[in-house]
Image 1: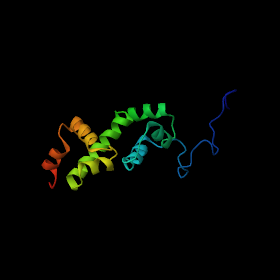
Image 2: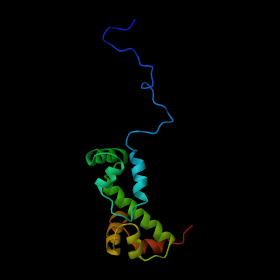
Image 3: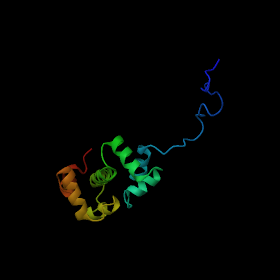
Image 4: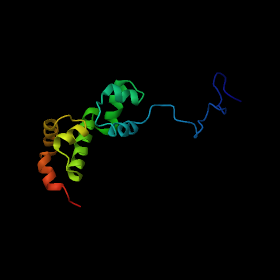
Length: 133
């Protein structure tokens, strides 16, 4: 006999979620990060990332930082430098062209962030690592 005023455990359709039904909540931060990676050449903002994640900017900032250990903008900058690093290793594109492709705009901007994060210039990096297998 159920206790008065308490609801017995529901057994109807609302008690369990059908595993085949689509997820209704916001996509995980990792999905948003994957979305950003293929758009590094575009202007990425907290508002845009939050909108893609279907969260408020404040909630998105908090969740992203909790899950990745860095802010979205720090993470994007690191992803841009890492992608530039890969292009320096695998292509003969100019530093200016690479900067444009990874969303850093100019070669001087790429050189600044590359040196700050990796403690080496893009051309020094290319000379050391291009053509290595």
